[in-house]
Length: 303
Ligand SMILES: [Zn+2]
Image (cartoon, rainbow, N blue to C red):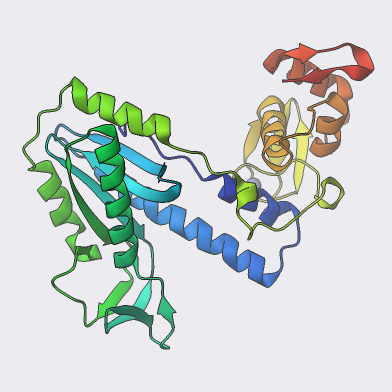
């Protein structure tokens, strides 16, 4: 199990809800799929590192800063003497490596992930020096998608191709390592320096207002709006999934919090969001049970 598990990035959480509840433009939808795919690739890599048996600490997704410059490490693993980090790419299809550049089949140049790890390595080294860590750093670009193919792939670059993932895990598992408290302190320090990126710092997130957002409970599995209520459960007409009303209401509260972090959670707001629940009392009871209630009657809200 990862010492720092991965959660979906905040901007992706916003995009997921907007994709369901707002009519995104083709461009915005494309960006949403791109983010979703990137996250999917990272999770795919986590499934492999999770199985490591060697004495190591896995830190997923670190967003760090040194000398006012930020950098992101998709996946890091602390061993006794080495600090590995991986830039994970979920590209699929055919690419070509030409004159130190990654190109698509159509000649479109993509951001060079080798430059990214070079930059991150140098910044990480600065951070380590500042913190007094003596760990040596080793970085790789990892292509996790089995449908990815690189023509003229260079042999002398720190790149892991999909068929080499197994060998990479073997290598990591065979890395001699005995961690001490010092390594744990190092991991804790890095986690404490991790910055959660606000979704609003991402200019590609569409702007939206409360009134534009489509309300109603959606199915937690297939995201369909075709849900009905029977005996305390929300039932999806499309996929048949059954969920308790309480759990569905709590999901709605979570959605409101993600999209409108400054909005007060009141019975009225949640009742309107849930849509198909016909009793405000039911909503109020669930909110009272799960949150701290502040204020009385019309002024009451929940935290
Ligand atoms: Zn469903």
